[in-house]
Amino acid sequence: MIVDRQPHAVETSLVITPGAEAAKVDEYTAFYRAEFRPVARTVYLIVHDTQRAEDITQEAFLKLLQHWAKVSRYERPGAWVRRVAIRLATKQVRRERLRGFLERDVTPPAPAGPADLDLMRAVAQLPPQQRAAVVLFYFEDRPIVEIVDLLGCTTSAAKVWLHRARHTLAELLTEEVTEDAS
Image (tube, rainbow, N blue to C red; front, side):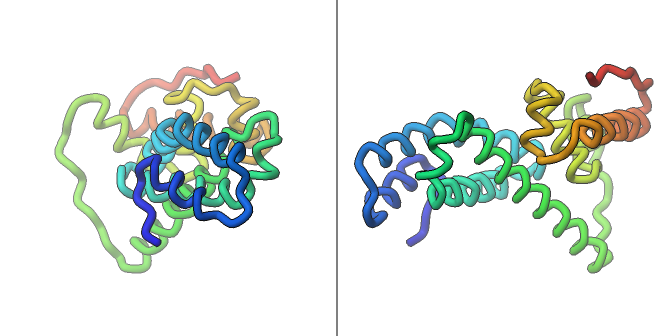
């Protein structure tokens, strides 16, 4: 069965899931509809490709569906699916970087554009974990405690990733670094 990226696709797969209770189906469907786009946005900011972001997010939600009976009882099931999606995204970014290195594929730099485009290009050059930390901290305005939870790392690791990312971005964007991570 081919699953498209629209909310009704999961609804269809839930209906045919053997032994699914109607209440759990409704609960999952409501959760999917509320969380798919925000999670896809986070993934997009890591992978910088809409199609891949939606595919990765769909994969994360399918994993959530497999574990819904357990995860739905968690205090924050959204954190669980977001964490899975971030791990899938960073894994794919690493894989693509390795592929590019092995193929010796060098892409020419894109022409200069607006400041936001420059920032997005600079963020795309960060290592996956730093990129994920930057996306969560600056683009999603999440506190360090939540970043630690989502990335499955220590507080000091998250702070180090943000610190290094800020310095790298400052170099790439030729700006001065300010220390503001807490």
